[in-house]
Image 1 (spheres, rainbow, N blue to C red):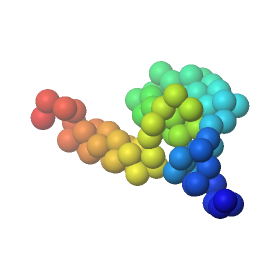
Image 2: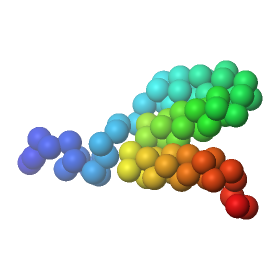
Image 3: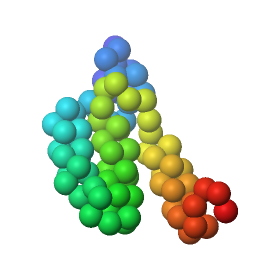
Length: 83
């Protein structure tokens, strides 16, 4: 039997263990700053995506979040999706 957490039946290859308190905390902050400005909306979206790492109902990775954030920033830099 291995002591490696990645070998655990309860956490197959999960680097981030489910943590409902972290999910709640990050999403609470995101809700507080949302709609203060365009930039705060963007940061709120990043916080929500980050909270997905700790949500047992979500399947994401830091790499996926980074790609998503880069896409959002690229769209903003171009002035929107339609341009």
